[in-house]
Image 1: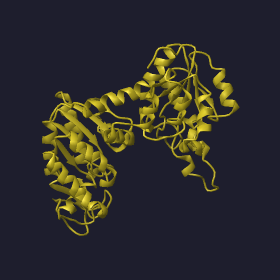
Image 2: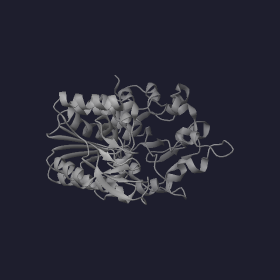
Image 3: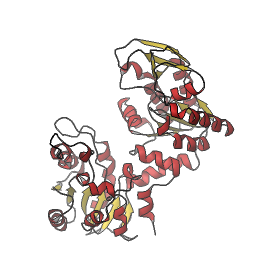
Image 4: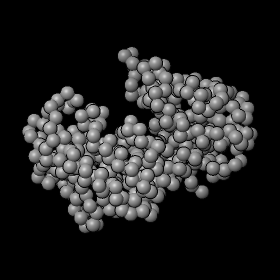
Length: 401
């Protein structure tokens, strides 16, 4: 970031898409906390801040009359938490464009902060509309992109808006720079052995990531629902476990490609299974290739946990994306939390660990080990896209000369 912000109005795209309680108060302030270094850096130079963000997907969740639920999705709800963390009052514009927003932005004095209303109250935001982007750009003299979690989407406030600022008046925020620096530690020259732990529901969501990791990793540990497509592809019986029939060939191709590249792909030797997708069904442990017809695999089993933890304990670089079981159910959370513990232990012994993806971040936070890993990414989809291509459109738009 540059140091020329004094007396300027700096328009910052933040990611304040935070979860709210039933009373619309902030239930997890992680994303606000992560934004603070950038905001304080700009304010400390004697600039004023104009903050813009989205919150949820209000145009997809209309009320019974087909109207936007303004109360539920208004960014006004986060102001108490933002003021507490920032340590100063935050003004609010009940629209992100228009005369009121323009007048309030113009009236800002150095050191003052204005938060604009939810960008996604306008369809033009997700359409990447140039007129809408220009109206936003008119509010500030500098533009700072600090919303890494949105960097893979060509929206008006993240991508299109860059067209209205020259190269001297647009910049990446500290959060984004930090994300790229830590991802590059694994993409450029990782310490070895490098182990990738990949979970989640579907192979289809992780094909490009797995292709990339086969080029980068020494070991790939697979868990979660996606593992059963691989087990099925190898001829195993998976009962009612999650299975993507259209991706059997893809799974075999991935296994073959890993073999050609001398990369070890591990599937869970055993699984913790149930006859119900809930925490109340019967629970058994069986071989992952021998799951009975009316049962489903909901977590990696104790043998798989031991094997995966042993590999992680010997690793110098670790990337984790996706839970290894349905960790929301206590009976099927052990695989995810034991792996989280082992990643924290390895980090304590000097390994570099990066956690990314909403569920993985939730799991590491829930385990109480968030402060014992090297880096937690704020961008699930964006991090995956960066690992796949080492390029994100919003960041490239800022860096264009």
